[in-house]
Amino acid sequence: MLHRYYLLLVPMFLFGCKKEKAVIAEQIIQKDNIKVTPLAFPEAIAIDTAYFADYPEEVKQFYKNNLYKTVWTIEKDRKALTAAIKNSEFDGLNPDDYSIGSIEKQEAGHKTLSEKELITNDILQTAVFYKLANHLYNGKVVPTKLYSDWDLYPKEINLNAKLQNALKHHTIEESLDSLKPDHIVYKRLKDALQKIENMPKDNVKDIVVSDKIVLNDTNAAMVTIKKRLAYWGDYKKEDSLTSVYDEKTAGAVKKFQKRHGLTADGVIGKGTVSALNFSKATRKKQIIANLERWRWFPRDLGESYVIINIPDFNLYVVKDNDTVQNHRVVVGRAKRRTPVLSSRFSNLIINPTWTVPPTILKEDLTPSASKNRNYFANTGITIYDMKGNVVSPGDWNANKSNNYRYVQKPGSNNSLGLIKFNFSNKHLVYLHDTNHRDYFKLNNRALSSGCIRVEDPFKLSGYILDNEENNWTKEKVDKMIATNKTQSIVLKKPTFVHQLYWTAWMDKDGLVFRNDIYDLDLELYSKLRD
Image (cartoon, rainbow, N blue to C red; front, side, top):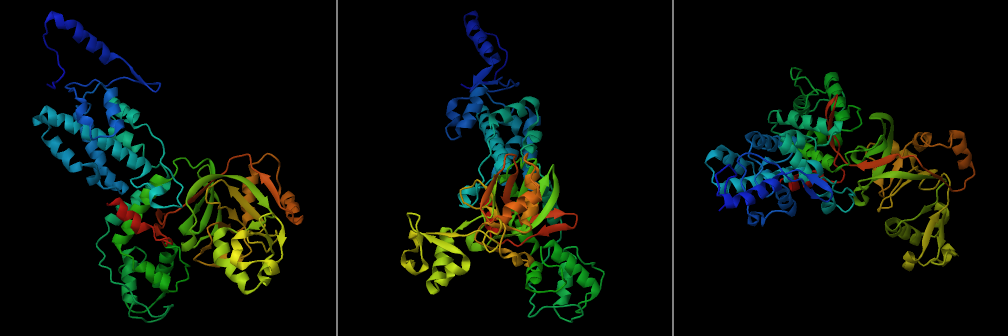
């Protein structure tokens, strides 16, 4: 029968056996070259291995390391776990996912629980610690199971050691807190969640505007627009709620537009109206989805790195936690999404050639060239057969376009422009210059086929090359460009690149949102609440 461990009188012939058990309890268990000192708490109960039938192997291993005895015997530890579960709500997680109801109920009647109930509850708390710890460290949803173009994988963590140490030193909450992202964006997102949670109900009614509203216009929708601007903190509630679009309201509109990544021109058009029509509930879901994404992202982005926020259409160069450069970018359109990944720049290509990828071959080149064979001369594209022989446009077989390779010669008209930034990834994407620099003037820059076009790319290359040892100068790079020959600059010093996706954050101006260009937010939120 299962029993509590306590001192008791035993016959002399059993003394040797009890002494042997005591020695075992003091031993250091060694597994995979990691030494584990079994926990020894008062009122610990021996556990039959049959109790672990429905639990993961790591839970069983944890109890094996601790001589199959209960470990949640200290009230302080149990209450700390309960508090951590409740606090998971502030990270956008759902406490109900971690059996909070059962744990609170059993804790309330802890002194009256039977041995069987104590054991069951003990194992449940260990399993819940593991589950919550993993969700805080890696997220609840596995991104690679949700998206084919997100190359973010679970980060390794030794939860056995984590829990062992936390119980030994009674630091359950601190241990779980240490697993959360330490990045400033994540911390401010948590603040954003609390801010929006504390906002009053909004009772949103969609604003309908048939035409753009400009300064001094009179429009019945302006009353509702002013109320929405006041709700989000861009307009003073005491100002006049009339149908006239006045100067004060224009200032509020510009502030609102800036926070939403819109052109801050004060013109109330479709984009501004659409952003105004978002409810508190939807914005809250966005924030929660973005908190989850930050748990997927790498914990260490590097001392020097380039980060691209895809929905923000911006690239930031960060060194020692300080943003030193900012570039506008063009990213993939919804049907040809830019993948989310982390990598490291390997080399720069000066005067790159461009080999037409399969998607563009199918959807762009083949239809265009089939209508007009001059397409090849106009775009500077050379056709090669499977043996590497040049094929004239007149001999090209449009019905078998997959049987050829298409290469665009280097130069200012090349689709990649004059420089290309390579980094390892399975999607064959990269950063590059462009021959369509006018795109950077647009507000919505989801226009590419997946790769990222960078405004002022040589300023970016200058930063990267400054880290190299070969004394790279602008003049030296200019000479390479002037040759019109394709040349590679191999990079030896690490500069990391992170293509990430976040549509909500908070800064000095308050809550900031971006258009969810790939429609991912609400889908992810629903997965988090499954």
